[in-house]
Length: 82
Image 1 (cartoon, helix red, strand yellow):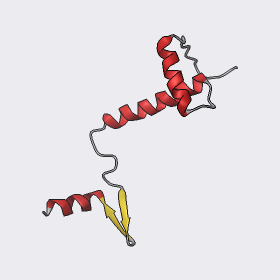
Image 2: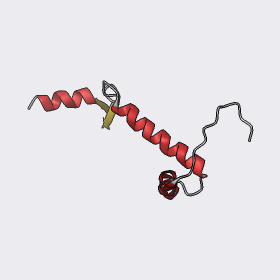
Image 3: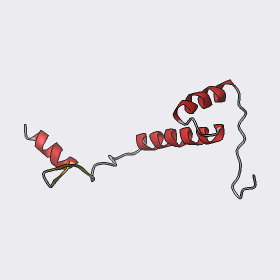
């Protein structure tokens, strides 16, 4: 199929076959190429999160209780009071 994007060719040796086989249990209706892209994207996200120097959830509201927003910092402050 024609595309404007560069292509990457992967030989389906034992290692790739194993990865596709495992991925097929999670993505049963996807092609081997789609499975590899999905799994690679998940792993890349894990690596990206692990490499952060800060907590990406640090400023987000994490809990809503009775109409009040409780932030991560509020929880940490409450725990520090003990």
